[in-house]
Image 1: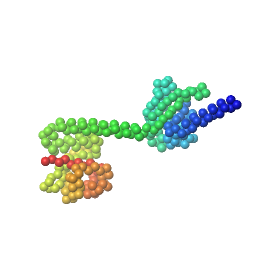
Image 2: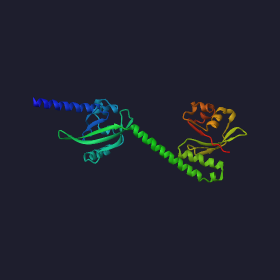
Image 3: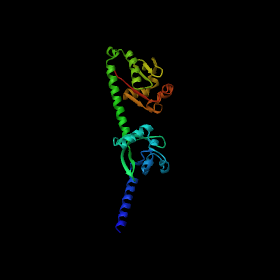
Image 4: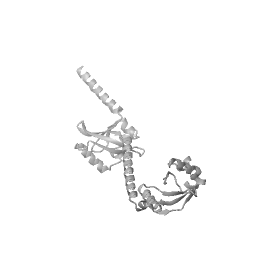
Amino acid sequence: VDRTRSDMRIREREELVRTMFGQTRDGIVLLDPETAGFVEFNDEACRSLGYDKESFSRLSVIDIQAEHDAATIRETIRGILSGQIESIDTLHRRRDGSLMDVHATFSNIRHGGVPLICITWHDITAQKMREREQLAQMERLKMQNRIIRQVNRMEAVINGDIAQMANVLTEMLAVSMKLDRVAVWVYHDPDQEMVALDMYEPASGMHTSGLRMRERDFHAEFAFLKQNRYVDASDAWNDPRLAGYAETFLKPQDIRSVLDGSILSG
């Protein structure tokens, strides 16, 4: 009777472990450190990477690791076995080829005298995306501050030479901000038109000037810019604020997105 009860408790614990193993939202695999193959895994491990159980069972960690080559993976396994590596942030490749940022933790276990590695991972793609966006924003702010300092030291700015300033600024901004085209225009009130002082395109490396846009041809667009000071259009061809420009200027110039800002002086 005692042995029967003991066997029942063992089976109950095993069933509890299987339930926990199967229902956790983390991917869990037992890894053979010799072959890097999967000895066992839970449903979430294969589901999160887009595999069915049969297909996933034929894979190894080398097949799903998107950041390191086989030699680096072997070196990592040695580090895990020695206790030097307990967790890493890395990339897994899904079955469809897309990538997933994961935080993986490792522990060494023995089963039947055989050493295995238990790998538990969870998806941190959203977190990494936020971190990359924050880093990119910081880099943009640093770049903007650097450009402002450069502009403030420009001789053309100090001397009030607008034409020379435009020539330097268009190239500086296009190169620094990786833009396809930057232009500085001046609005001539008596003629009611804008004239391009300088337009720079990095692809050709050329500066051009003299392009004109008359207010009577783009009355609504000019009025909006005067009133609102800027227009930011990611889909310029279909943005109603730029409707008048689309056929006569944007499409012929292959301009797909626009940031127009007005600078008022005097």
